[in-house]
Image (spheres, helix red, strand yellow):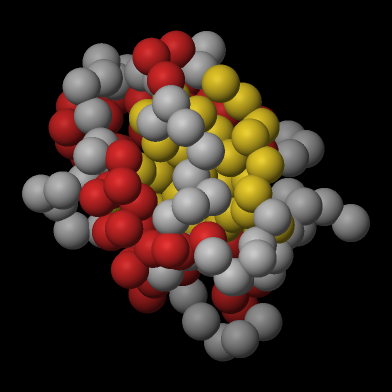
Length: 165
């Protein structure tokens, strides 16, 4: 059984536990520190962050925020938010996500941007965050299968955004 929970990426030197979005007793753990105060946290549980939580995190950090909801380490719902950009949603490992959604009679195309548009939004997100993205890397990751864990793909995605380790 793989990991179920949210991954949150923000540029902020302090823990985000004090944000109202996380006052329900959810356990938040710092997983990784990257360059320039970028951090990756995990928030265990089987619900993803909602739009209000992303907006609040952008307000708390003063910077763009990225969230990913990991589904059994197979696929990931990816959401990015900046101050000036509406939240965009894509997924990592579309084939695995398609299998999950088919169980409910739904399609990935109904919920997520296609890889090309998602790559464009991710590049815009990265530039708004003051990063130097690698558009080809981002596009490649958005079209890849996870092997074996989607969390590894997420790390590649962060590298492509220009969030240095």
